[in-house]
Image (cartoon, rainbow, N blue to C red):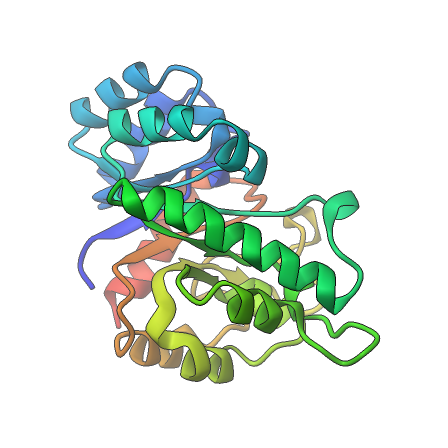
Length: 248
């Protein structure tokens, strides 16, 4: 684990992207992860990556784009040199409310896997917290997704697992063989960092990243991606977080 990545969404409030890429290179990053906001001019983004000696091996694409415009996704991923494509989220109004609905959503992800794996990409799901909250019948949406989509990979967002009430060590033990990427982020102590939605720089919060890093080394995870959903200072977050992981 030597090359660390950075989810560019973390710096969405600190434009422009060119400046962000320069900052990341200066702080020791080798990779970044894309999201919708940097795809509008993929060629320009690729030029900026090349100019800073950075790569973008992974990217997030909405379920709508993945299902309705696969060629557009493939064009963007190809231009940016991606190797892994992840579906990152499901809007509140689109989330199923029962087990059958979540199984059906898993089947949609399995169908998307068929499309993107055929084109040579890793394809998987990136979790939030809602997938770990039990349904009225006691079933867990994330398990239903995995059961209905046996082929998909997993970009495990550890902090969201915790916020959803799950034990990340148990989930990694059960599904570690599926993990191709990890979102590395931290949760502030209760009442702290309220201006940053309760998130923290990696190593400055409550998540046991030292133990998790050791556990995750036993999985196929290729990409370790720093993320903070709302940092007040993105360079502080980037610098302190990579410093934490490099020390392990």
